[in-house]
Length: 133
Image 1 (cartoon, one colour):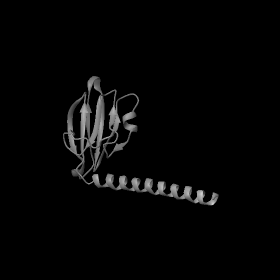
Image 2 (cartoon, one colour; image 1 turned 90 degrees about the vertical axis):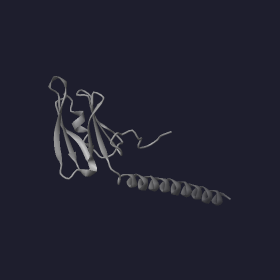
Image 3 (cartoon, helix red, strand yellow; image 1 turned 45 degrees about the vertical axis):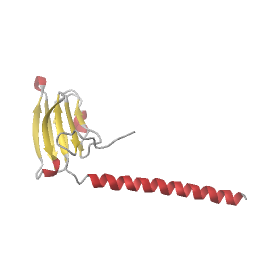
Image 4 (cartoon, one colour; image 1 turned 180 degrees about the horizontal axis):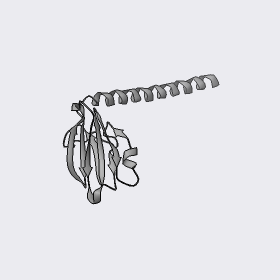
């Protein structure tokens, strides 16, 4: 009798592990399917949209500078499919350390200079890229 309970427990664990692996694989495949769409980087300064860049249309990497109040500067680097802040005049440089982003999961922000860079599938970024309950 004891061996039968052990087999039953092992079977239940195997089913649970298979279900978790299947769900993980489905999530990975769905997230890769969404990356084929156009990706737009929307750059905000003081809450106002100042630049929209189609990251899928970038042929050569380039940089540009955003100037803010009191001589603040952020150098934005744009590459095919990704964007980031390569240098900044802020004292902590957290925005530079955030690196480059290629998805809308986490925006690049420079709080001292009031810069936010978000990625979305539309130029106006009105459509949510996901829903959580």
